[in-house]
Amino acid sequence: MHEYSVVQALINQCEDIAKQNNATKITKVICKIGIMSGIEIHLLKVAFDTFKEKTICDGSELIINEQKLKLECKDCGYIFETDEIRYYCKKCDSLKVKVLDGEDMYLMSLEME
Picture 1 (tube, rainbow, N blue to C red):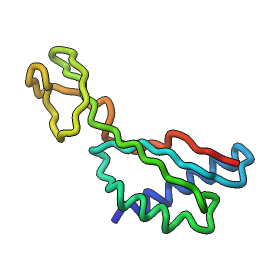
Picture 2 (picture 1 turned 180 degrees about the vertical axis):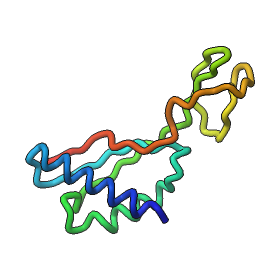
Picture 3 (picture 1 turned 90 degrees about the vertical axis):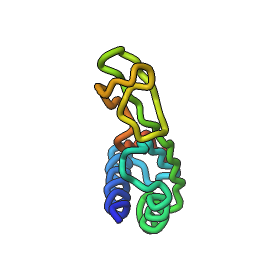
């Protein structure tokens, strides 16, 4: 389960940001996770709750915003979002699409004290 290593990297990133801002506690962690990121959200939450203890994130709340797959058609220029795992244009059915969002995980913001 790679969610454990993702959580460890997330906590390390939170600690670095807290240090840079002279914070002693993180109360909220907000992330955006794309549906094609390969991350199981419920497993990530369990891993975060398990590993946050005795870190700067102890007691913090993890908020996850799920990002749909956002695509741009290279043929007709149509930009759209979809919950489906589809890499073709909804408008013209072209297979020439560019992924704009939905394949990654981002730390969006932290609430710190």
